[in-house]
Structure formats: C-alpha cells, structure tokens
Amino acid sequence: MFVRKSKKSLSEYSTGELVMFRFRKNKLAMFGVVLLSIIVITILLAPLISSYDAVVEMNMADRFQSPNAKYLFGTDEFGRDLFARILYGGRISMFASLAVIGIAFVIGAIMGGAAGYLGGRVDTILMRAVDVLMAVPSVLLAMAIITALGNGVWKLIIALAVSQVARFARTVRASVLTLRNVEYVEAARCFGASSLKIILKHILPNGIGPIIVSATITLGQTILSISSMGYLGLGVASPTPEWGTIISENKMNIGTYPYLGLIPGICICLAVMAVNFIGDGLRDAFDPKTKN
Amino acid sequence: MSWLKYTLKRLLMLIPVIICVTFILYVILSFAPGNVAWQILGEDATQEQIAQLEAEMGLDQPLLVRYGKYMLGVCRLDFGTSWFGGEDIAKLFLGRLPFTLLVAVLSILFAVALGCPLGIGSAIKQYSLMDYGVSFVAMLLTSMPAFWLGTMCQILFCLTLKWLPVSGVGTWKHYVLPSVILGANTLASMIRMSRTSLLDVIRQDYIRTARAKGASEWKVIMHHAMRNSLIPIVTQIGITFAGVIAGAVVTENIFAIPGVGVLLINAVKARDVPIVMGTVIFVTIIVGMINLVVDIVCALIDPRIDFAS
Image (cartoon, rainbow over all chains, first blue to last red; front, side, top):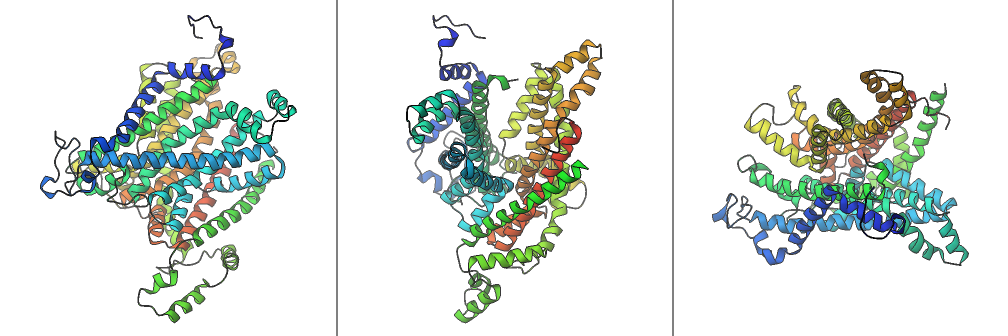
C-alpha cells in the first residue's frame, strides 16, 4: 500500500485518482509516456524540422550517404533524406493507427453498448455477427477488404478498422453487462434518466478501464499491421513515405547499407514499445489484482 | 462419450458460422472495382466478347444468385477456378497448404519449447535478474515487426555469414529462419503466458498444502503447479495459431516459401477474387477446427471443465 503525507485518507480518493496514482508510480509506463511524447511531438513538428520537398526530392549526387551532420539518418538509393522520410512517414503511420483505433472504437462501442444495454434479441443478433467476424483471422479479413477497395491510406484504415470492430464490441459489451444492473444505474433510471444519458454518464465512465487498456494494446498491434501492409505492398505506396514502405523500398540495399534497414526498424520498435509500456501500465493501474 | 457429443455439436455450430463468413466475404469482394471480364480479356476486347465472358462466368446475374451458385459448389467441395490462371482453387490451396502448415507447426514448437521453460524459470525466480531479462526480451519481441526482424536476420545469417540459405524450400536448413521469425511473436506470448499462469497457480491453497505435506520443491512445481498452469498455456497456443497463420503471409513473402501466404498476397494484388475467397474460407475452417481441438485438450487436462456445459 502507499503512504502519502496529505491529510486525505485512502477512501477519499476517487477511483480515477487512484488509477492515475498507480499509473504514475509505474516506471516503465512513465518511460513509455515520455518516449511516445518525444516521438509524437517530433513528428508533429516535422514541417518545422524539415520541408516535405526533402522527402520526395531525388538527389543522385548524394546517394547512399551514411548518417552524417547534413543527413542525420543518411540517404537512400535516390539520394532522398532518410530522416525527412522517417519523420513524415511517422505522421502517416501514427495517424493511420490512431484513425483505425478511433473508427473501430466508435463502431465497436455502439455495437457492444447496444448489445449489452438493450439485451434480448438485439444482443443475440449483434453478438452472432461479432462471432462471425471473430472467426476470420483479422489480417485475412483486412486483406479481403483491401482486395475489394484497393490500395491507399484511407482504404487501409477502413480495412484494418473493420477487422478490429468485433474485438471492441466484445470488450464494451462485457463492460456494459457488468454495470447495467448496479445500484447507481438503477437509481439514475428511477430518476427518469434517458438510456443515452445513463450509458454516457454512468456506465461509460465506470466501465472505460478495460476498454482503454484494450485500445492501447490494439494500437501497438495496429502500428505493426500498418507497417507490415506497407512492406507487403498492400498499404501506403511509395514514394509516399511510411515506416513499413521505407524498409520495403530499401530491401535490396540493406545488406550493403545496414542503416537503411536499422533506423526505420528501430523507429517502429520504439513507437510500438512505448505504446505497449503504456498499455501494460494502464492495465495494472486499472486492475492491480492482475499484476504479477 | 460426452466428448464425442460435444465435438459433434461444436462441428455443427461451425457450419452456420462458415456460411455467414462466406456470405460477408462474398458481399465485400463483390465490391471489387473494375470490369473483371475486361481485365481477363485485355484492353482490346470487344463489347461482345466481354458480354459473352460475363455470361459464361455468371457475372451478369444478381449477387444472391451468384452466391447461391457458389455455395452449391462449395457443398460439392468445388471452390471455383482462378480468374486469371484458371487453376482449381481447392487444388491450388491444398498444394500450398503443407508448406504453410510445416512452418506454422515448427514455429509453434520452437515458441513452446523455448518460451515455456523461460516463462516458468522467471516465475520461479520472480524479480530476479533473469526474470527481468526474459521479460525484456519478450517485450522486445512483441514490439518488433516480423518483416523487419526477418529481413535483418536474412541479411545477417544468409547473406553476410552464409550459414543458412537465403530463400526458397528444399533442405531442413531452409525452414530454420522462417520458423524462428514466425515463432518470435508466439515466443513472446508463450513466455508471458506461462510466467503469469505459473505465478497464479503458485499462490493457490493446494500448492501450500503440497508444500506442507513435505513434497520437494521439484515435485511441487512439476507435479502440482505445472499441470494446473498448463490450461491457459494450451488455450494460448490455440489462440496464437490464428495469428501464426496470418503471420505466415509476411514470413513466406520474405523467404519466398510457396505457401498459402504468398498465394493470398499475389491474389490480393492481382484482385483474383476466387482465390482470396477460397483461401480465407479454408483458413477460417482450419482455425475453427484448431480452436475445437484446443477446447477438447483443455477439458482432458482439467477435470473441472465439463463437456456438458
């Protein structure tokens, strides 16, 4: 247990405060927060650091420059600045991953919320649909959708989001089910609160824990999926930079110039690792019993 | 007898799921843009030729009719033919499957053989240097993209050190690196799962009872704790199988293994809808079967699980 010098007793802290307190005490999670902040701030400030011209501009005189003062991460076979490509590629990788989670979360929350709260036939139908979606491995489902839609950032986002909806729907439904009949929800219902208000004001804030944890862990996997799709040539197409696409387009030259593979790979690793540390930290903070 | 009844029931329950999956896939894939007949015939095809081919392929009929015909074919194990190559889908898939299954099974064996001892070791010596080291490696493996790890290992072990062949199939050496790369992610989840599971079991009352009876530490771990911590591990193996099959798509591409993954990727790129459709259905059936086997194995290990429920 923890000891604090403030006069508040343990029971006076809200659940949210306790979660934040446990999360802040987790060193790995805080490391993840710092690492992710650095990555996100750097890629957000990309236009200030390097112009987009450097990303696509070919400069044959400066081919295969090893990392140096002018080219921080070196250059590729067309003399393009790898640092600028990774910087702008990160914007696509991170933005697309967040969009996937956002879309999957909203649709999943509506499906799972409706199923859990309304119950009965709605629940049966929606959950059978979720079972069917879960029966197909998500990468394969995403590939089938890409076959229908074709390549492109938004198409990739839709394909991956649809393949993640079922998972979110299940998590949200489980949260709603455990909270549907607790006393404060019953009390709110007695006061005549509408279903929408009960879900948004009473159920969601109390059941959000497992959903946030699941979203964070899925975010890490989605960063990996997006770069894998890019590598396989099903996602973002060259010359638009994306972390997976950068590795794929340099595949033939990595043997001679290892920095072309090492640097983008390490960037993906760091981003995913930061997200995973935060996810694990949140899981332990929301549910200290599971911590080993 | 109860497990036979259970198996039959589960197999019957798989049928409506497969029917729904095929329907959803069929609807999704019917949105594939572009005129198929025009793509097959080439740019200089006449309007009549296109109309004739469409009629031959049944593409001029409504979606539901086409779906009904497709499903009638599926019942006769006829999954249609490739649009561009003309090969029979079932034959094509079954010819590719052994490579994928071999790599998948090898990778899971690798992950279990290495991951379980590591996880158990770090659970027994919790908070030791080894525990932290193993957890860190597991964290690293989950955060690494398989295509990157694969490409870098290929360059190091095949091109620079020349210990292993670069790509293709043939000798056992060809399967070493693909299995390890495909198993890397599973290895991480095995380490985490067996560690968590054993830590969970060690705190149970029956472990204290066994210790109180004077059983040796070895016997407590191997006899009382291990068996009970196996159930989540077996379940995890089943869950990862779907991931392994999906991961095989990437691994097979790196190492040019002529498996289902390469078949699927090429079909997605060429928009050969029947191949994509057939492959996804086959894999879904295989994954469903494996989940069934996992549930049965779990019930056999743990007498507390009842087939009737």
